[in-house]
Length: 170
Image (cartoon, rainbow, N blue to C red; front, side, top):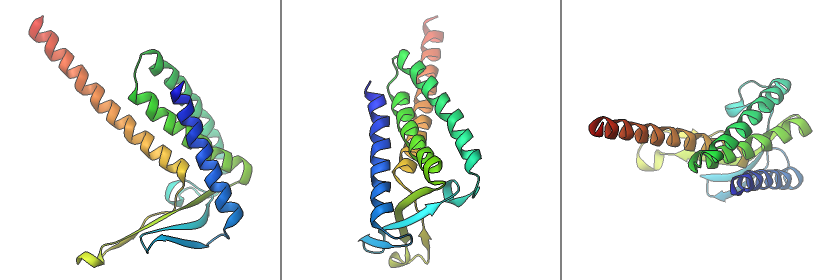
């Protein structure tokens, strides 16, 4: 049950924060939070991560329906197996996917607002990276995918130990 609540929490935080940005900021408006490093920047994205596949709304809606169906199926399966990290990863992924899905269906675009600029010139490296503007749903997706990779590595390690243990004792 807790994993479904995590999905709901990600979805609600995402939609609430996007509503605040959409109703209280003009598109392009910037509110500095931490100097030039972090700001709230009202932005709209009609594509995917880093602005790829612009104006492919129907494609994203269909893909998201398929992905969400797969996530729910796999989450139920991993919960029955008694696993914990994978369902957490999938719950974050589910909440994020649904958050951006709602935007695409309702608005035809995704509301983004978290903006980070990494400026290394202060430490003698002549490099500035302006990270693409994103939102809480995107964060849930990225953390969820990262945890899936971690779970996969841990599961492979556990299986390797079992095989080694069985071959020594067998």
